[in-house]
Length: 113
Image 1 (cartoon, rainbow, N blue to C red):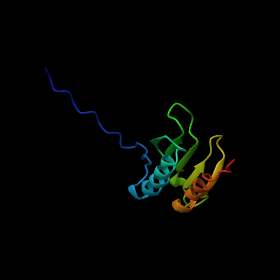
Image 2: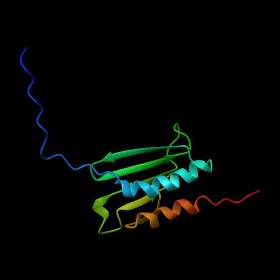
Image 3: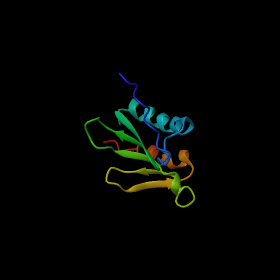
Image 4: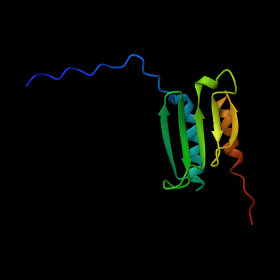
């Protein structure tokens, strides 16, 4: 049996965008506090060319409550980080991730009956 030649790696493949460890630390910090409070239950991370998404779910079978998106192409315009709500509305956008994530902390406050 002849050896199988290696599959050539495409040189023109677009670079995949991902969250760095320093970016995941504040996201997971808020996520952990909200899981402990019983507000959130699951998350998913997606990496695509030009886009990384951290989706937050109440339960894994539902649609995401929030999405934290990273789009480096918008770094010089609107800001590379955005928090997007369940219906697709942009809740906050900017280049400073901890500042952008503050919108998730304010969502934690609810009226008590």
